[in-house]
Length: 453
Image 1 (tube, rainbow, N blue to C red):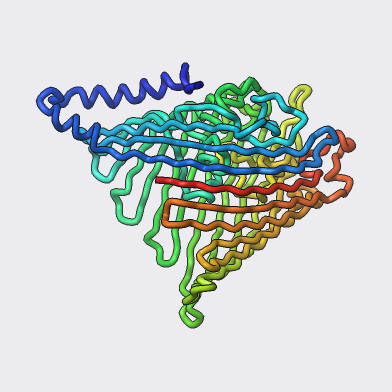
Image 2: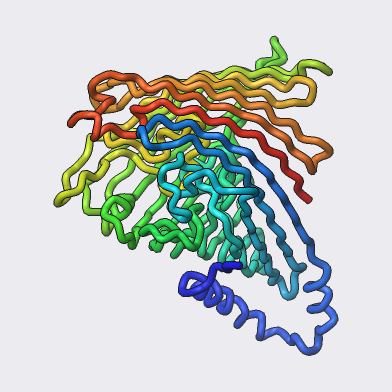
């Protein structure tokens, strides 16, 4: 069993030790019973998720279809509070059931198979000290999971929960909601434990060493809406030039809400978001790119029991790009990037755009959702084109059905089909050998079941 350790974990332990100094000032010996009660009166959480994933990728002729049967298991324990301090610890284990017939992102070396980034291994997913001694404030130090919006809307910061090996952060985080309707969230991050597994031999795959400042504030005091402002300063100490180019400064705002359409017993849904991104510190590339999201839709509840709800939404999302920039012998993208985000939830489930192409992307898509017989159904159709030169990338269908039983059990099935456009620019400005993965068709299929307590 491989447990995450070494220098990155030492930083988390050192952070926790700082909190422990404050706790040591309390008369612990005189309150041994209270300490014991805090340690033993906590809560255990357990989850297990089995998933079958099938990937048919036309990116290269030598790439074979991949199938993965994997099981993710977590067990965590959160103590009660002792002098306002508490501890949370969680182990995560990912197992492949049967022979591995997929490229798990570089760890198993099966490069002739399509990529399914679910490497095997056992790791410390979370190990953090929590302090609640300040009014309306939570301080968390150590290894932890961070998100600023509930999944799947982790556009800039998330845990990548669709993959089996979730992303976590070695960080110190401050959350305050002392002002009515206002929440302030700041984190200083020095390491990101990525989804590729601790034993991955490829550069920058297992960990992202960085100096990161993550800031988000949300205000819900406006009728029918929520306003969010955010800033992300990321300085990656990466081995690869392309990853150093992810060092960016990003500032933006989001306005999202739902208005009660009384005459039709429905809701009008709307979102507007804008962000600007520039190069930061170690970035070798000059970057000035914008992000825009506009959404408009409607939802309606029904008495059921067959049809319980129905919604439709049109979305228009742009991540700008000004083409590749040559640095020495390497082409580096100038596209708007979200390296800490849960990117599977954006630009289609076929994962053709996990990194923004150098020419940027314009994603226009329609989403239909319904709850039928206690089952959540979703259908999405995307059409993609580049921001620079406006050539077509392709189109994509996404279909999903998920059902939750008794709050603890979940089963689901989903499918993604990406059809690439064969125009000259999409196939590569310097010939097919220079084409990005968005120039090739791909089909993906998943079935899963989960239990969580």
